[in-house]
Length: 380
Length: 251
Image (tube, helix red, strand yellow):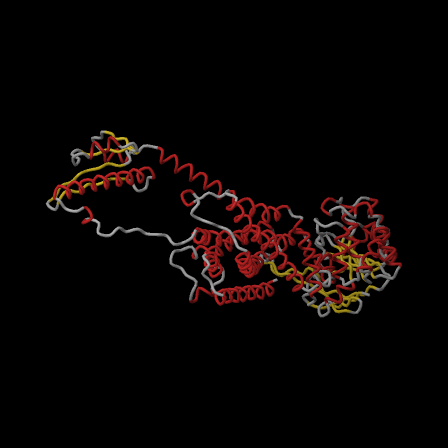
């Protein structure tokens, strides 16, 4: 094998690929525009929806008799609209009301029941509002009764409990984005690798250029490595552009996260960015080899798309597992490709990583990338 | 020089079973000779040429091209040939100049040699007007000229040309035919397939008539004319096919 020929094939494939509009779209437009725009639009819609919902009055009803004074509190509350409903259960089902109250008496004492429909946003909001109002009413009753009995008020609450979040905004940002970004990054890397991989394998067969190149003195391994390096380069560029655009879009305020805004920070310090870049390299090597090994079997572009789509879903699994609560980067998980990168990504953003962990993940992914390349070269 | 020894190719098809695309063929083509492979579609011409070009592995037999064995020395064979067929398409997103640069580098030619050869070929094939345009934007004739340029860039001693003038206008055809004649005069060994009878008549030194994977006869045009007592190659070819059918029916 001659390295010079690998470089020749690589240079030609890069030039050829960069002149393909579809690849450019996937490499530049999708990572730079799609995700930030998606986040911005979804975030905006969610914010507007929440604001709209909070402006609306919750329509409620109650079954007489209510505890003394509670009915007037309900009527007087500006967030509630009280309706008279002879059949509140049916009205709740028909969404004519969003929640209703009923007092029940038993030998153990009186209880107040709030009926709502947990599957409906407005009904859940009505329940929260009623809950707050009823708790307030109960506290007033307790205070009045304690005062009547001449008992000190702090008897009820000997300790005031307050939870204080010690995580700085950067760590909170790391927690949230550490779950989202690896998944999006894997999607972006696979999308970035997919078009050039298909174009350089099935595309060559379809266009009849593969036979041309097979009549010149170039070994199949030289050809394969040139193509593989091209796909990896494009996937890497796509991944890096995606990371940069997400970071930039958040710092410029394009991405709003509703109530979380202001409590989160998301920016890469240069060392963190370099670490993430270091992690993307073996990931891109592995994903590119995986996509190429499948695309090589296809005879046409369409055929290749049909083959690569199931692989795409398969590759997403480890990334999705990494978002499950309680999954941590230890034990065997350190050696599972994609999953380990996704988890390490999160740990790096949370500033909770060690050189040993990074080394193990890099080695594991590099071994898997190497194995995939060996299998791929046998198939080519 | 090209020498084939019992060279054959058999394909396996799930529905039709074993298909003898090329029956065992032994022939020799000398340097400076233009050897025509004449036959209808499906005769096995392209399969025969693809085996010589090392794109297909023979089922049995072998061939020596410029002294190199197609089965055991494929890389040396590839250095010795220039191959064009309907399946050897070009990279549409490159320009002819970029394409030649790429193939020159793969043939391990020095940069200065590539530049000199490119200029000479552009002049020879009258390509200067379109060398900086993307190949996907070129006309059929311009694309075929670029294919020829790609094929002759490394100045190989053997040319394997599968229907080199198919679908071309008269001017481009004439340029390519002139190039083939010049190459033969320069001592190159040329094997070409065609189903244009007139082209074979005025261009080839010897002609092989091929039908259903079998070489029915090899002769010069004059030799065929004397053998069959007919002037036109089309009539001679039909004679041989009838004769072959008769033999098959008798068998």
